[in-house]
Length: 395
Ligand code: PLP
Image 1 (cartoon, rainbow, N blue to C red):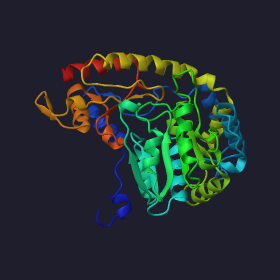
Image 2: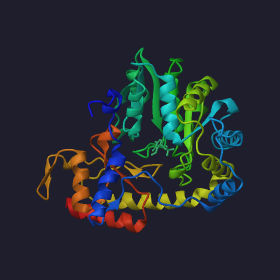
Image 3: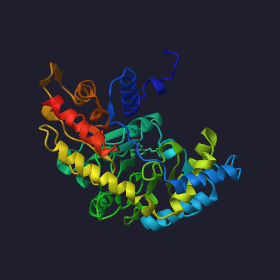
Image 4: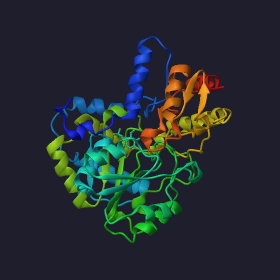
């Protein structure tokens, strides 16, 4: 391995994928593992979207697409941004990519020079820090806790800004905490940012539709003065149960979108043509068509909060979106469970895998070492059984 680049040697392996691999290994040994580690809806892609893909195959959509996506798809993205977010983008401001993950990587590679700082409120989605580092940027973690519902305050943002700050990356609804920034909270952050016109915000809104509140979703780009300094990232993986189709997109100032187009043109070209055709349908249809999945996630959220609330040591916030709970489990640190000493969230997560046969992910890789992430994108029966086993294991 000493022939490999420092770039790859310095990169950490995605913790969520690593946990999934370990759980799979135990499953293959015959163990009855309940997997609550992955960020993936357990629904099938809805039929109306599948039909659009089948039609695209039969109509011989098989050639390279424009690098930044079919015009028809970019038009559907524009329609979606207007309909759902009150944002007015034009065609040159949209770039479609192979998942929001590629959108994030494009943005990092075109925006960051060596040493540029990117403020990332913790907890954050696992890949943010490594993507920033890949682009030679420096992640600057801003610690939050359950006491502020895991959200960054304007004062924390102001304190983290230095002359080297280039960007801020965050997700709302947040993976892993499920927290949602309200309009007032985004305005608070924007009030600070309006004094720094050279700082850009990457607003990851991939969980937009998975929102359990009546206050709706607010985009950072909607906030006064923020449109020209915000890159809005979204995609179809989560709300449309299309993780494997790999389609994400951005709306951004056109000079940033043009640069992403150029970057993608040298690395991967346009995203998969069939998935793009299916996404046109997914975005043009009303989001109410996928509401049944969100309703079910809400029932599961209430179920898991209720069950976890009965176990001493699992302190949770009330997640308002996404499909994760992120309990603070520091109560267990220093304690011995079934002969095993628990000193960290990783120890507890491993203990739960081995003793309760439930796969979760340690908060360490999300920038919060006191918590573990439990996904409730699983059936109600699986959730009940998993939490029962966890309760037994830690009792
Ligand atoms: N952003 C966040 C916050 C996510 O949780 C994920 C997936 O887990 C992604 C981006 C990447 O999504 P995609 O499947 O579109 O690459």
